[in-house]
Image (cartoon, rainbow, N blue to C red):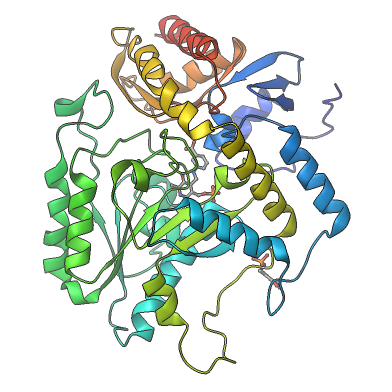
Length: 438
Ligand code: PXG
Ligand code: PLP
């Protein structure tokens, strides 16, 4: 396997300590099903589904062939005042998978773009209905909604915001729901914290509800380190937003496509938002794609005015790119044919037990889980937040396991094709690494 690199200087790596990485690079050069091949020829078990996105496992032939076929048939078709058939087919398939009330699909190329699209649609919707004073957006502390200016504005991760000035005006944030004192070592949804949703009423009273366009949350927060919603919390957010005519946006970029053992988090929690954002698993990550799915009320409100006038002045060169559509259609076939969402649900109890076997390991202050996602939180080293988990990540990688680390939390979210043996191996290597690193 040729993994020679002439120079590491020019490529500015995303969300990476570039200088540290380039001194001891970790390169991946191949992938198949549950494993990567590293540049030094090792098999690396993928407990992160890449970056929470390769839900059907790597290089699945059906998806590979669909992309190859599409690339040879029609590489690109303009999407403005033009279209290609697969874009309509995919939108119908995605809408059919989602609960009633989420029916119209706007395509983009990433979760960040799906989020910016959702925020823009929310503002446009209120304006077209004569409620243009609804301009405020409410996110949540520790929320991750990508890296666009809209996404970091409603996002709640300090490091992702501090370098970039004032961002969007008129944004406020709900408190996060992480509560180790009351909820540590919860299995599934934590008992405590539903009342945190009532903070929304406080924020609305401050700004007046009539100025607020939308509330956006991840139903299960992934990137910040796996925060499972407290029992009753999302229902409260839904009730409060509905009461005040405010749109509720669920960012399901991670929680969608089977990660929680249901098609989407909205199914599992039985709470239907007005807008949902998707990306990652929609194409099994084989081609970048994002999607924003809206209710008929939002769509229909914007389909007004003279029919020859563009209804929404928004779109990306690569919206509904033919290769992404081909990859997505094949991916949805694989999910369906192999029953992968049900498989995730079946595996979830075994996965939960395996994750919680780390309770009591040195420095582990919490294990939390839902579906096929788990977060293992370590006590930070004094004065060096994140250093301990980073060392665990490197130790795991050297022992043949890819994990994902944020702060002092290790996230495990394997492809949904994982076997019990893979799960044993994942938590075995992770437990050893935690013990070794200390
Ligand atoms: N919303 C949510 C909920 C996400 O998790 C995005 C939006 C942005 O998607 P794009 O495709 O623009 O990256 C995400 C992405 C991690 C990690 O392990 C998480 C994400 C991306 C990269 C790393 O913390 N989530
Ligand atoms: N910048 C320039 C100069 C462009 O011409 C375009 C698109 O035509 C863009 C940015 C936006 O690119 P995209 O549509 O791929 O987001």
